[in-house]
Amino acid sequence: MTGPRLTPLVQSLPATVPFVGPEAQERASGRRFVARRGANESLFGPSPKVGDAIRDAATGTWKYGDPESFELKQMLGGHLGVAPECVAVGEGIDGLLGYLARMCVAEGDSVVTSDGAYPTFNYHVNGFGGVLHKVPYRDDREDLGALIAKAAEVEAKLIYLSNPDNPMGTWHDAEAVNGMIDHVPDGTLLVLDEAYAEFAPDSTVPELDPDFLRFFLRRSFSKAYGLAGMRIGYAIGHPDLIRSFDKVRNHFGMCRPSQWAALAALNDQAYLGEVVAKVTASREHISNIARDNGLTPLPSATNFVAIDCGSDGTLAKAVLDALISKGVFVRMPLVAPQNRCIRVTCGPEAEMSAFAKALPAALEAAKNHISA
Image 1: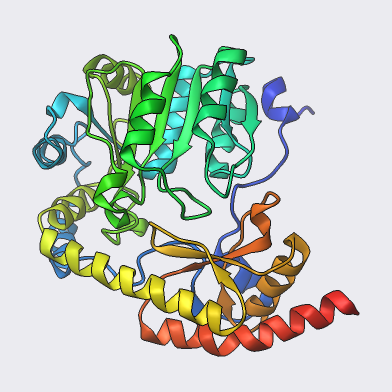
Image 2: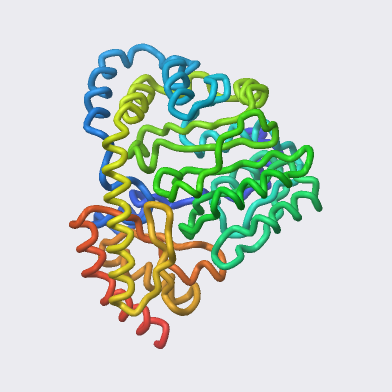
């Protein structure tokens, strides 16, 4: 008896996922984390209006969500100053990435990204048989010129750029991003990931120009709006690009409670401002904790701080493992030299105290482990 007849591409791929979730780590260790500081979720939670909206939507869960996300697209268009026809909605940024890869990437197509950038993008490109071409970071930031040069060299279908950046928290200003957009090669689509845009200085985010056919911007309700568990992402692009996107997306992928939650969150900009202020204060608190322990925090425009542990990936991994053993969940970049850092999500005082308490002992344990 033969098994399922998988495609040769699927058979060739490793059995892996971009991230191992904190729940899986808790199951493996047999204990719960006391501080969940690694997934860049909003530890401050969503607007109180979101809970009310979800409760109102709960009695209607026998109905599919609106496959066009009509109300949400209308509200997003008004909020962003673009026509609703320029907006696509999907199951978080990860879902949008999967549909984009399905739309643009065939086997053998070239795609350009930074070495060490958001790994879920690579996961989807590999899943459709694309060929990834990577350029290194420069001074802990994605190298805009190198990305453009590589895209021209390999005739890339897509360029991926996150700004502000994950996993480093660094950023380029809008002028630099606009300069990059001006040099996107013909036939190439720039995928600009602005999942952390709400936390960044105003000078970071370029003006939206959905008339530009080689530009596809993606944002999320998972970070500043505190809706990571609801899986709501959206994209901005030329209407022709959005119509092509609609050909491949899951039209019933957005459930009704998620749609209502997003509407409620978007309609409470005052609460969003409160969260951004709390994150700004938390970034400084994390940076001070790092400095108090002889470590160097990197400047951040996100809801996390990358902390330079002062050596290389071996030491950073030992610090991460020691923190996890003490119940503090953090993550780290995967590629050198960025992997000299650990990455700590912003959060309220109780979470901060747990990190501050665990870090000195984790550093000592890590150094003892390395010297043993």
